[in-house]
Image (cartoon, rainbow, N blue to C red; front, side, top):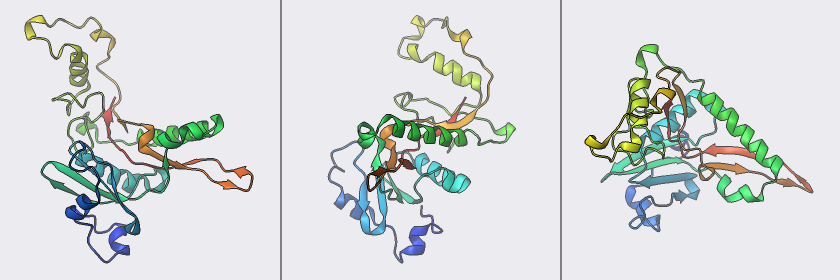
Length: 237
């Protein structure tokens, strides 16, 4: 799948690098469950791959950029490939350090600035609406939810109703028990069956966000968020 209208194809008169080229530049493709991303500096391109990388991530990044433009900083997606259950996502290379790398170097004011930026971005996520007759809880591609809390679960949606999601969630602690040993969850009544389903981020981790800051003489400029790279986003109440 290629997005031929993307800036990559407008700027470069060539195809995206082949999977053979990506594998040749990867140092851990054959040994890691999720290899480190491969960078093509001259093409301003990053390729994220692995068995655990869902196509929904590429679809979500494409959708966010299309809907929000520059107000939600995500890399531009150029396309994706699937080979032997491996997904390869071709996207814009974001130049910067991840928050995970630079967090300890930031002072309290800079951390507050970045947290405020993230809060504003997530608030924009939650403004997305959908047709009232088309409600569901799941990934943007109508597949299972990709939150890391649920990734080990085999039947994590999608759920057509909030009640079905809550029933499933409430039963997770007993999922490995024989049916004969399961019991009624005494706390199920505290989880409401009604509410508003909103669009949000499933794994907002520091390693998935890039930031930058710079110095002008003795003046250190405030950091700013450059992009959210890992977008396990889904509909959740």
